[in-house]
Image (cartoon, rainbow, N blue to C red):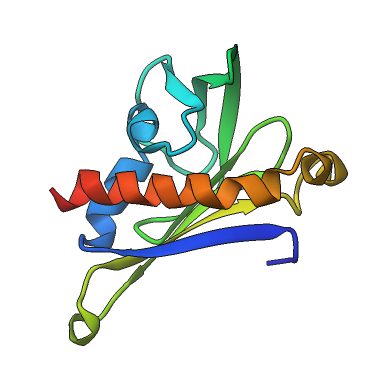
Length: 148
């Protein structure tokens, strides 16, 4: 990791497998998105794996747009990350929490713009400061989905 990464972590009372099942289903991304930008999956819902491509209908403010992402990092039940044409990555890392510490899974969501085609633009737009609150909301929504 580099200095061009912001992350938020939360312990979720569910297994890594249950959490990963949500993350690898792009049709469920709008259900857990805390930013309000992810609207719906474009195309067929297929379980993601390394190299998978998936399209999403998005919205920034009142501006709708479409984006296609590719899974760039993948370790079953432990790690998934994707990037789109901007090349920055959204990453989820899952780490089991031992029962003596309460059990569950520590989930870390990261926005990594070290791989970005335009890191200075991302910084100028203020995304590194804006995204942590959205990521906290995403992890809250993810927890509500898998803990119920």
